[in-house]
Image (cartoon, rainbow, N blue to C red; front, top):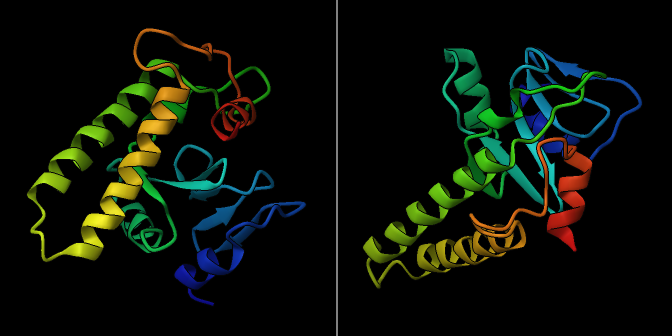
Amino acid sequence: MRTQDFIKQRQGDKPDQMRWCSSVFIAPDGNFYSYGYHYPLLIKCGRYWLRNINKYSVTTTRHTAWCSGVSDFDINLYFLTKKDSIGRYMLDPESIKKCIKTEIDYRTRRLRDLSTRAFRQRQITADRLTELKRIYNKLGGIGRNPITAGTSIEQFRTLITN
């Protein structure tokens, strides 16, 4: 099976143990990683898939490209590098908000620059921009912060889906 087919077929699964295809695996938490837990490719957040677009290596960049068709948002997930005492990835709220804000700014510029004839692209961009703003506002913008540095991925998912 090709790796990109593995990603598409396994998306949404939560296996009992890691499932590998070449150098990409899906962990029991349902997220995809490249070579190890140090580089998340696709993270499930609520009903959205976030694709890590952080630059790493040639092969990991290829893995990231294979995930492009199955992700809802492209976000630089460098903030998932902190681990707690039992090895779970921890979320840094300021980094999350900064990444989401950067994505909002990018999509706002993109929407403005798209021609009026590119209706479908404008609609997709506008829909994603709306969802990013909702998530950003759910997190309290820059000032208020409903999550703390010790918030787990599961707690974060609960926050953005409620």
